[in-house]
Length: 68
Image (cartoon, rainbow, N blue to C red):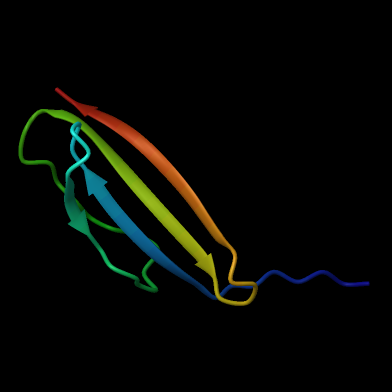
């Protein structure tokens, strides 16, 4: 038996400030990366959604960054 992995995915990147306000939204894209540069010091959350187009499974990850 051979296993295979779906390589078709869609991504969504969102940036939130420390108060939870949405600052940037990539919308849904096939690009695997997203460029964003903070304009001020503070704590930011980057939320990433990855949807496998074969299984329709969505994986969510959140990363917190503190800019000094």
